[in-house]
Every structure is written in C-alpha cells, then in structure tokens.
Image (tube, rainbow, N blue to C red; front, side, top):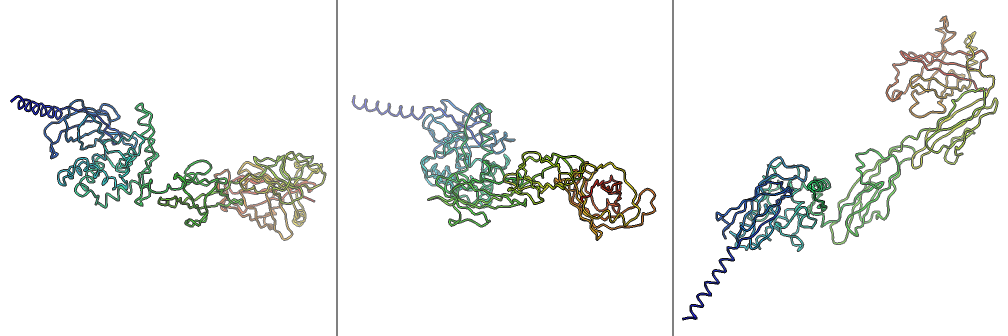
Length: 597
C-alpha cells in the first residue's frame, strides 16, 4: 500500500513539474529592420496553438530606440509564436526616413529566452512555414529550413552554406555573410518603391510562394532583376553608415554586391568572377562625365576576385583568352597633332571554378589642348636700335635663327636673343612643347635694325598710281593695330607684280588672336581719285573666317565688311607704309609697315 501511494506521489510530482516547465515564462528581444525601424513602432506578439491558430494570448511592446530594438520580459510560454510589427523605418536606398509605415512579421517557436529579429525575409516565409506545418506535416524546424532555401533561391542565393544564419538571427548592421544577404534582399525589394508599393510587393511574393515555394510571377521576377541591376550599392552603404553614425554607433556595412545579380544573368556576384574595374590616373573617376582627357592616361585594370586573369583588347573587339593578358598598367596616348583620339578598351576576368565575368567596355577620349605659341617682347618690323628679344611660354621653347622650322632638336631658349646687326634681316621662329601633349604652332618674327627709321614721319601724296604700284611691290614687315581685340601683332605682307598679295601673321600669334583669314585678292581702282581728303584708294577684297571670334564673343563675317577699303600712303623717305582697313560700323585695322630691301 505504501509503495502504491509513493508511486502515485511520484506520478503527480512529475506531471506537476512538466506543467511548470510548460508554464515557464520566457524573455523575447530582437530588432525590427527594413532599414532599422524607428522608436515607437508597435510590436504585437501572440501565442499560437499547435494548429498555428491564435490562442487568445497577445502581448504588446514597442521599439525602444531608433535601432529597432524591442524586448518583452517573462511573458511568453513555450510554443508557436507570431510576431507582427508596424512602424516607420530608415530607408537605406534613399537615405531618409520612410513617409509611411509598413508591417513585418515572423513565425517562431519559443522554448527558451531567445532573440528574434523581424525583417523582410522572416515576413516572406511566414505563410510558407504555416502551409508546410499544417498541410504537409513538416516539423517547425524542417519547414523553416525549406522555406528559407526556397525564398533565397528567388534571389539566386544558395542556402546550403552552413555559415548562413536563420532569418530571425540576421542583422543588417553586422558584417557577416548572412547579414549581407538580408541587406541585399531588403534593398532589391525597396529600390525606388514607395512604402505602399513595397508592402504590396512583399505580400505578392509571400502569397505566390505559399503553396509550392516557387515564385511564378514573371513580372515580379523581372522587377527583382531590374532592381538588382539598378541599385547604387556604394550609396546605400554610405547611407546606412551615416545613419548609424548619427545614432552614435560606428559600424562598417559590408559590400553586399556579392549577393546581388548586378548584370541580370541569373548569377550573383559570389559565384562569378568580379567584373574588371578601370582605374585611370589613380582614380575611379567617371571619365564619361568629365569630358576628354588632356594628357596621356595610365590605365590600371583589376578584378576583386583573387587570382583572376584579365584579358583585354584596344581595338573595340570582344576579348577572348587569346587576347592580350593584362600584366601591367596600359598607357593610352593622344594624337600629337592635336586630333581627338578615342580608344575603346574591352576586358573580362576569368578564374578557376567560377563563371567568367562580363565584358566591361570603356571608351577613353584624349584631346591634347592647344599649347600657346611663344610670344615676343617686340613686334616684327623695323626698329632704330638694337633689341634683346625675350620669348615667353609656360612650356619649354625651341627656336631657330636661319628661317627653318623649329622642333625639339632645335636650340632651347634659356636667355634673351640679341638683335643688333645694322641693315640685317633677322628671322626668329619659335615653338613651345608640353611634355605628353602637342607642340604649339610656330611663332615667327622678322626684325630689321635701321637707325634712320622713324615710324612717325609724315605721309606724302603720291603723284601717280604707277609710282604707288612700283613702290608697293615687295615684302613689308611691321605690325597691325587691331581694335577688335585691343591687341597689336606682327604681320608680313608680300605685294606681287600680278596685283595679288599674301599676308602672314607674325610673332605673338596665339590662336585666339587669329580673327581674320588674310588670303586676299588685291587690285587698283581709280574711282576715288577725285576724293580731296585722300591721295589714292586701293580696293582689297578680303575674305573673313566666319567662325572666328574676337574676345571670345564677337563673330566677324562678310556682312561686316564695307568692300574693305585700304588707303596706301607712303612716308617721305619711302621706308614706311600705313594701310588702313575700313570696316562698316567698326574701328579700323591699321597696318604699320616697313619695307625689307
């Protein structure tokens, strides 16, 4: 009898202990993250029966900071539990707080005090887990693993890796692989969707995969593919790190592009060789947004995949493993004659046991800038004393004194050039050359020293046209006063016996000064011989370059010419000549010339 009573006591004690264990209360805490939910988001926790039906026990708490943290102490008993939260969140794609709240949920099994994070992934598998447990007799553990594999497969991610955590353990602020996966999926579904559009997309995916675990909607698959390709990963990382820094925590968000299909080929980055990257002049600068380069480019190509080989072409053809193997930086040069060059480089990377990368194409434009021609401190023409000619340019100057065209083998200018030979003609030609760029056009100046020359001697009236023709023939040098640009520049004019003439701009002939194309036809005309104010006019029909600019603004065209009348007047010793080019409604060009004998 005593033995029987003892057995009954033991049985009752065991049942009581089991009941106490079942009634034991557990703590729950975790994060609510899309980006992180802000403080004050409601979290509803409800107990479920074995059939996953609410048993009437519901508990409420809320996020207690802007990291999305929540907790509930000593309330939940062992068993199935559903978590539902609604609130505003930090949108990692836009870098701003959401304009409206969204809802996230998750299904868990509580058997001890534990951590449970709510996020997009726990929301996507909630319906699928319920279906597997109720309709296909899966255990909770097996249903969760199966649902997680199926959802990640939608995003081309393999869940078989043992290092990947369960969805409720993932945290976007961590730097483990699992957290990168959560962030990747979260950003793909968010992209440029509004809160309402995001909620709709999540619900559609959840319902689509509920019964068979396969996403059948082609439109959603296309949206996932498109969003993946358009995401600005670096911007998202910056947004999240700035947000957490603002909240007082320094974190490093991992680059999650390895878990995104960035090129739409159905393979995430971790399973294919990283695409080549072009680094030129030591930067990742977006060349296409900066215009042509003005100097040679040192181009480095790299792939972030270890031991990857890179093959490339420079002729626009798609590369193969028979193309150039990249081993060291490539120097892309421009055209020394100053023409625009375009070099298209195509490359791909390949590594063992991985899919080859995409072929990445980039076109580099190089246009060497104009190198300003050397300027002279004296203008061409006759001078009445010796000269010390100084040449000026920001680049090395090369010059000749024998009339030949200078090049980099000519004499390098270092000190002023003396001009002191009486009645001698001195011709200086100079050019500047910038390393890696093209050389300037050639500046030419012609100097003559004549101690008797006085440019201010008065003009005289010629007695007849034939005398003018005779005195005019030959070569004249001097300078032009150009009121259009408020500059003077050297000029050489050769009057020919067939009534034509040729003009050359001399010295200081930087390109912006060339406002007039001087190829001209010259002829005599007596129609002005009765004009009392002038001795004689000679009409010169001058062609203008209509694309030329004066001071970068004014265009000079044919309509500005008043049949360009040029007065010829000689000084009293016939050593000087003044030409006045008369323009319609404008100042005149004045040529101050002396003859070379």
